[in-house]
Length: 429
Image (cartoon, rainbow, N blue to C red):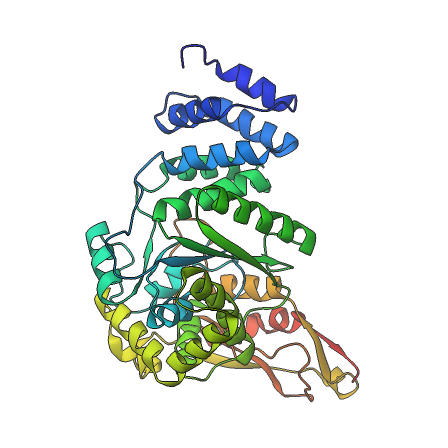
């Protein structure tokens, strides 16, 4: 655009005026190609943070970021494609059992996931706890695994929505992360570039989530669905509570083990219920199941028959991991040197019911054990974490185990017991 002047676009957005699709496209193109100074892009992001964006502007930003790199298509696959995106949370291992379960039902799941930072774990870090599993594969191999197995979970390539990677890094250090239009464009640019025909969004709210209130979560969910549908995809969203951890395990290898248990027909019923709630619209919107009842019947069949577990084993093997994990995860996954129970305090004699389990505290606990990153460059201990975490509503007596700490040493576990206990609140029955 010959008449494009970046500061004019910034000023327009600062004053609450609409910015054209062409201006947004030019802004993103120049930023991606290092032709726009970071300070101007930061100023634009701050203007968006305060003034917001119309649906049309958000769609234009998403489209420009998506087209800043490669886009994938799956027309040659023999089955429809669907994917799920979660806004993250403590103990959120849902993608790991979800992908093979949906694939066993006849839908291809091309899932490009991310790593954790801080207290929120990442799907790729969990998969990295499986010895040999390769989360970085060429697109050709990604496509081959999808066709042969039905699902593949990998990391973002350098050429997938590079504008998002640059812009997110800038937002992270300029205080402009919590903006619904910017979050929407960030998530959708990657998911649309990934190419799945159907998208299901799992938007969390609560102490262990980025969105702290149901209202914020619903606003983001609506924005994501509108954006995906505006780009021609079938989409829906679920809004879920993240005030306590998902499941009974938090920590990379421990969450893989719990995921396998779910596919084996065991594991926490509440976590499996979340998996099924996300799987249903992936099947119905893809046309594999006529309605919710048919979808749930098909999902139950694939779990009971072991078909979903078999797909998981084949996906792990296709990515270089040991398929034996599907039978004996404890024989394949790393184990911590020390496992210590955290007992219920004497006060539970009078207040024997767990009133709440604070997800944020559990996330911080696992980080301090070494199961997360304080900085992007930190190495993770995949074996550490917490499991057998009792859920809110459980009755306990003094001395009962509230959770188990998996630590690198007994001293480390003992030092963190007080913090672990602080995650629990109790009430009278």
